[in-house]
Every structure is written in C-alpha cells, then in structure tokens.
Length: 242
Image (cartoon, rainbow, N blue to C red; front, side):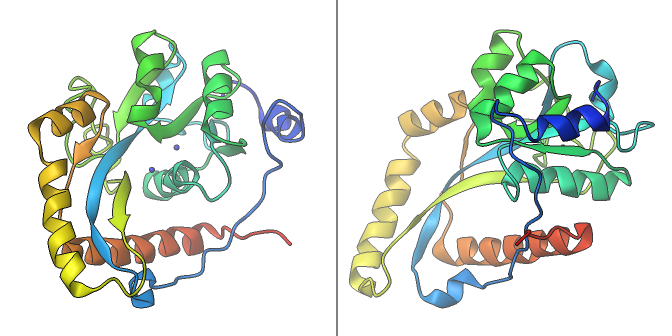
C-alpha cells in the first residue's frame, strides 16, 4: 500500500552498491487469474500497510504536502505493493515524490532507519520490532479502520487522504483440477483452523487480521484488486524498461 535529501542525491543512491536498485518502470498486464481454474479456497489473513518514517520527521504526517517531488519513498522493489501504494498515495493526494527502490524490504528498512530516505509504506507485521525499539515511527495505516495493534495511529483517511485502503494478504490455493469433493472437505477444515482463538490471537499480536472468507468472496476480491492496481499503473504511467 508512500526526503531530507534532494533528487540529485537519490539519483546517485540508485546506482550505488548498498542495496538500492536502479529506478525502472514496470508494466502491469491485466490478467484475470480466476479464469485459470486454480481453485482459491479462501483468504488466509491480511495486513495493513502503514506509512512510516524515521523518528523526528513529523512534517511527513502529510508527506509531499508543500514539498512535491522532494519527499523520498523507499520500496522493496519496482512494482512491489509498497511501490504501488506510494503511487496510489501520490495520485489521491495530488502530489509527487521520489521513488527509491531497493532489493527487498530489509534493505529499505535499514536505509529508512538510517535516515537516508524519508518514508515508506511497509507491512505492519514486518516492522513491529523497529517501531517498538523506537527506530521507526508510524504515521498512518492504510486500513479502513485503526489497527488494534497500534490503536493511536490514524488511518490515512483520518489524516486527510481518503481513498487509500490497501492490504497485503495471503490466501490458500490448490492445484488446477482439484476434485470438488476434496475442496468441499478441505475448505471448512482450513476455516476452522484459521479461526481457532489461539491462531487468531497469534496473528493479531503480529499485526495481522484473520479474514477466512469464502472462495467466492476471495475471487471477487482478487478481480477487484487486479482492476484497481491496473488503473494505478496506467494512471501513473508506470512501465517496465527493456
């Protein structure tokens, strides 16, 4: 599911050897995955993305506001969920920023902590330990409501930027051609296991929300997500270089 250094420095950083990737553009082709007949059993869990920065950068509570093209956003790579969430943020906020892609989330986390980039959208579950240690500060979450794991953190809608409800999610799928009789037995068993109070408690403690919906609900969600992110890519003119 968005800094103190200028564009020139970030252009230089993109070519260094510390983990940052050379900026590139990616093209997303709209493919209806549900038409491949891969059975989707249900959505397992989901996790909000949160906008975070290094402690002390409070002006980023409205990142880009008054500073278009100046605030840098780290991502785990071009085309990643955090990159596209930042693109969506810029579109909804009517501003722009500097995208700094890295070779994975860990490298982005380290540079964010070091203050080499200003902000990032990251999964709440992946940075909880950094927040607790005071190394990162969460500015807002991308959920439709506040996350129980960080109840004092506002949603982006509350922070003044509506229309950015983004979740990272996991789902159970099965091989093509799975017999209907097997699916009928397996799906309820998975739901029961996921909804067990002990399982829910452990996931909630890590910032995850258990969904456990039906195959039909998940198929609709997936199609809506594909259409949504295709629009973000097309609107942002995001393309993959040859």
